[in-house]
Image (cartoon, rainbow, N blue to C red):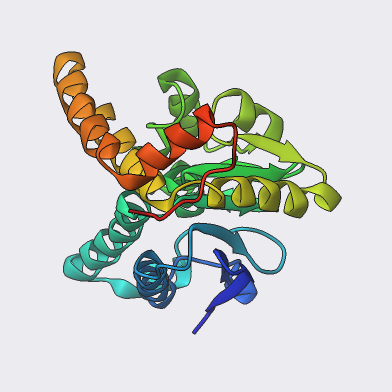
Amino acid sequence: MNIKVVNQTKDISRVIINDPKTYNSLSTRNLLDLIKVFKKLDNDKNIKVIILEGAGKGFSAGHNLKEVKALKKKEKFQKLFNLCSKLMIQIVEGRKPVIAKVHGAAYAAGCQLVASCDLAFSEKNALFATPGVNIGLFCSTPMVAVSRKINRKSMMKMLLTGDPIKANFAKEIGLINDCYSKSKLNNEVLKIAKKIASKSNLTIKIGKQTFYKQLEMPLKKAYVYTSKMMTINMMALDAKEGISAFLEKRKPQWKNK
């Protein structure tokens, strides 16, 4: 397996795409293994936050073009792209927050992977691109995730030119949260992961699910749905404990119930 899982702390897991020979490509094998790993971590009650990163020179170059070229049949192409979409949906619909930690390049489906994560941080010299147009293959599936994070004009420029953007611009348009020097990136990502892990796991799960679902709804439906979800949240023990702790000026003791 090219996917490595390391427990950073008792409640934070690092998922490392460990296939540097292919620049951590999202090959069929790697996609299947990533889906399996994310499902397993999603069901692990001890894990609260997942950090996703790549080994070697960079994050991920996207699909393995040697594999893509060898597929030939329409059904096999469809299977590969469906599998990639399945991974992205697993990350978005999963109960645990996923943080992308990016160095080097995140191109095509690799950029899609960054955009699919809940948060993303990178080194200052990291590059992001949807360069499929350069090889006659428009980045149609990557644009689903990326276009939901950045504005349309920026997205279309990336798609139509295939040109990479630098980390500071990726931050400016909302593709990543922030960028740091190589020496600081790991500590900064770990710092925010620990902060998230200190919250109620149940509350985070409810909140993440609600966030993505309401984005796709018209305004009135979004308010009806979120009011319902806040009511469900309010009935949980952790909400009662959190409010009591705030009023009593003490640290909450989460039960995740």
